Image (cartoon, rainbow, N blue to C red):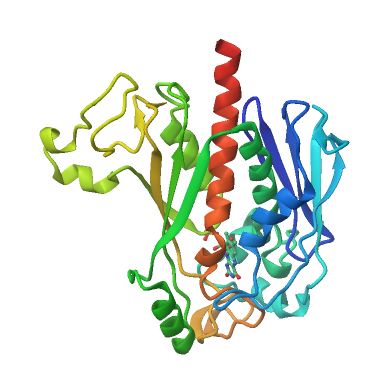
Length: 326
Ligand SMILES: Cc1cc2nc3c(=O)[nH]c(=O)nc-3n(C[C@H](O)[C@H](O)[C@H](O)COP(=O)(O)O)c2cc1C
């Protein structure tokens, strides 16, 4: 199942080397203005082609098949589709018998009893984050006036992104890193005290993005080493603004009007060009695997806009839920 959200729902479909990838967004209010240029602006931020990203180039042109008329949403389900054009599937056939370590080949083979489309990682591919980015554009429009800022803080522990990228490329190895996302002008009151807390839902969404392995809100793990007097965010005015923002803009699961701030850890790309010894199910022993195909050295470079999109989607859903209670 690939469905997410309560009042605003998204499902995504497709495979990396199938005909297309896409999303269906249900529950979007009618009358929201949307242009193809707005979609393309965020889509461009996820595109490959720059240093450290996959040489696979796709035009990533969105085709809106439903729920959109005269440049506005109609209130009906919105189906946005992207064709896959630049695929080279022969590179992937050996991963059935000799699964890539760190990737989904082994679990996909077991769970779907050999029927899953393995080409390019199939339905597990980072390509499925393209329709997520498109959904995020619509969510941002629902959240009119709320701004997002997302940046890579470090790559392989190095805050000099360019330097680290060059080192990793030279070593023919991959690299991960840390992304920080902050959301400004969020209203007070989004989220619920327990299971649908802002942190719970954002974490759910963030871990739906392939390759994300950790998240922390505000000062995160560092709070464990502070005293209450050091960690407490003192309220300084009627609006509820706080002197510090150690809690990352959430108290009791509910947005407190200060910036929502969180960081995520993105793993190094598992498909690397260095030889790896791993279990070969055909030969029933460990043999050397050389991964062919086109891969991102650091897929984190393409991930900030994806993080932003899923965050916007969750917040837009919470925003619509809150409106029904007003
Ligand atoms: C935008 C994006 C691009 C990605 N590109 C690649 C890639 O080129 N090669 C690869 O092995 N993994 C890539 N990944 C990560 C895999 O999709 C992911 O590691 C895999 O599906 C297994 O999921 P897991 O890492 O969450 O266990 C990418 C992820 C994202 C978000």
